[in-house]
Image (cartoon, rainbow, N blue to C red; front, side):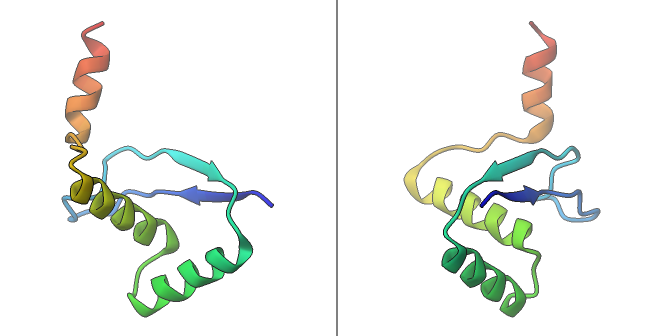
Length: 78
């Protein structure tokens, strides 16, 4: 099974990007349902919960996440 995770702009939230990307991934259906239930309980979309989990994990293992505008400034310099 293939699941699409869409990340959408959320105005007023500094953690949300101004531009979005689509992430296609395969996931065990049991895990997908667990994520859906966790998102509902946390009053989040599945995409937002996954983004928060990724940010938390990266922070925990020391992987920096640059501001989005910084990423695009680097791309335009080339």
